[in-house]
Image (cartoon, rainbow, N blue to C red; front, side):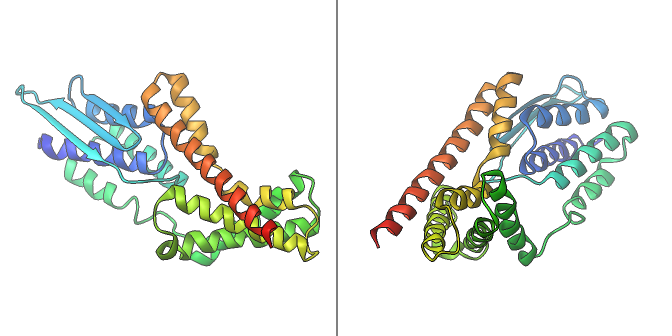
Length: 253
């Protein structure tokens, strides 16, 4: 067996799990189970949100280690489920490594990709449904949908203008949404600036990241949990700063 290819396969699986938003314990356990299923004893796996390190010892006694740095990632539940199912299938069927590589390369190809206009529609619909939860009426829901669409436009089409830095991108989107919410209420379309603004900003709240941070801290992955918590706090700070800037700019005129 080519243990280099097997190690590369396990690292790639770990990276795809991490890229899809999997918890650290899930990444480490999946990679470990895969290597054990192919007959390796005591593989070592260490993962944090932006890095995966896997080390094995071949039956001949040769240690091999692979490390992969992971770029910024978000959440893809469908890809996560496909990776989980792929790992379970490999652990039970043990196909040749070359065949397993072929199957792994097809995971992302068959993942559903939504058109930009559908994603933009989601950015508009979600705030509209959040509005009643915060006591808003139909007018506030309409304004929240408009502000949500503005956020979606900034995220989907404004990368060249606002850059790729997640902190500044979130702050600018928050500023645009809060300023637009204030303008819509001043024009008499909406009723409550707070309701419209909060409803629109809900699409930027890092709920999954914060949940994973708490889960990892409780599972004993303190470093990974603190990293995810710090990312969530920075995102929340960007939302707060951007909202304050947008409202301050609106009240100046």
